[in-house]
Image 1 (cartoon, rainbow, N blue to C red):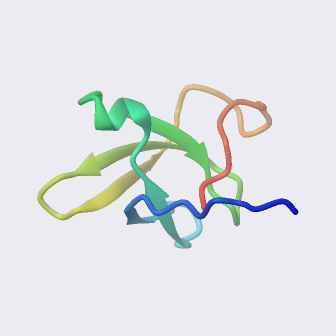
Image 2: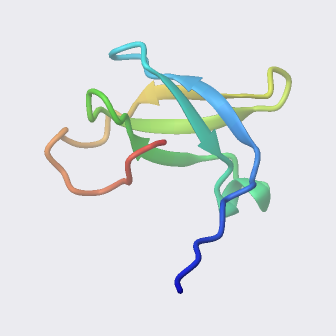
Length: 79
């Protein structure tokens, strides 16, 4: 019998600046260590996004990543 553990980390709201989809994102290991920078793709429009945690609002701030094309295979999907 195989069991899967449920991820119980806190998720923070972020809004994709391209399509407006609401995304719920956990802090990365780097964010937990104090490096407030992450990256990933929107699940809906696949835009590559830069992610920063806004401590005051307790939300993720998402901006379109300007460093590469949308066809690059870097970055994971945001959930």
